[in-house]
Length: 219
Image 1 (cartoon, rainbow, N blue to C red):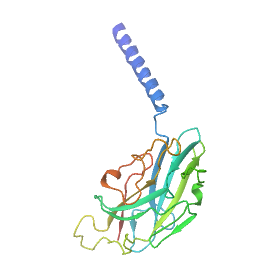
Image 2 (image 1 turned 180 degrees about the horizontal axis):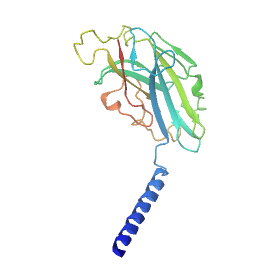
Image 3 (image 1 turned 90 degrees about the horizontal axis):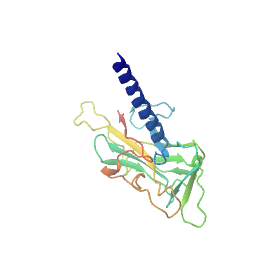
Image 4 (image 1 turned 135 degrees about the horizontal axis):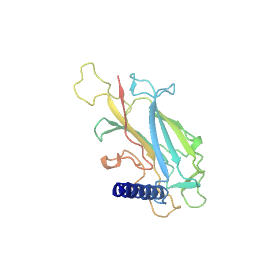
């Protein structure tokens, strides 16, 4: 009986040590400072995974400073963000929106958003642009897509008798084209950043500055 009690106390001690170790690890400085998400919704602001042909689709891109300290992101061009739609299950980009976001409002035939909520001042004399965050601050921007591809044509819809699994089925990801987090001209963090222009297959993975791929269909 005493041996069993000693064993139980030993197991409890180990569990406490593991718990303390995990708590310490979660607070380490190498933990991610930012998290980026993207949701798909209709023009009424309701989350949706299916849309009628030609109806506007809204991509809501959010980046959150998950630390209790002010943080800054730096960009080496006017482009701050990018959203890309690919054929489902592939790396084939049918549309991407990477117009400069330092302009208050961007509107093209297929891409429209208001970047005023990002509050991006130009970094004085450095040629970089800076996005500042208060502790735990979240910044959100909504990009509206009219379902046309990069050539201005309506993208395919789900046919009545599907010939392929991907026709009319899409995935979308978005993110911020961050150059670095340490200061203008210093250590680039391009591996975690969203691509400028159409992303390659290796850039379709989520990171602190890139969202996951979200699936939706056009019928």
